[in-house]
Image (cartoon, rainbow, N blue to C red; front, side):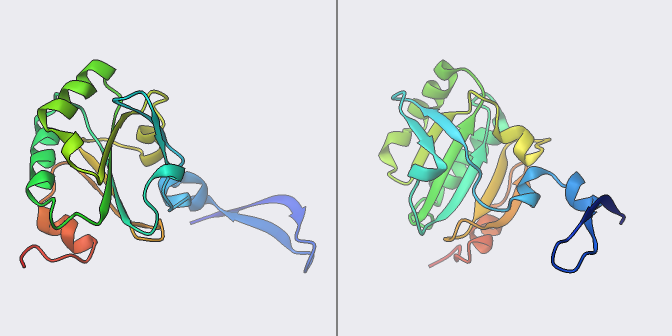
Length: 170
């Protein structure tokens, strides 16, 4: 772990300002561990952003592809546990076409779930922010918007519920 000095002095104690090399190389979600400033186009062409999701709720951001079998399976698992997740704001984002996203929305009847928002990441903001390698990608945030953990690939629901400190059984 190295540090860099840029020849600037801290005005308080006149020491060189040092920046940890590892913090410069860390992906953005680790450098900024709060809900990212996304802007998604929903099926009704309105926008969902970090600023208009539910406040003081745990948040699950899931990046998916409508034609990805793992993403479909994860969605089915989430819907099977929707009662346990009723107080979790679920934001589902895709970069695939608007038409594919609408088909996915209709197939899984997303309109039935007040806590699920789905939108197209037309600016391709989320994949580089999270440095994604596999789908589905899940980022879990606490009620204060602070990052709890991230997952790549299908996850068992007990692992997701545990991260939110929810129980899998009644």
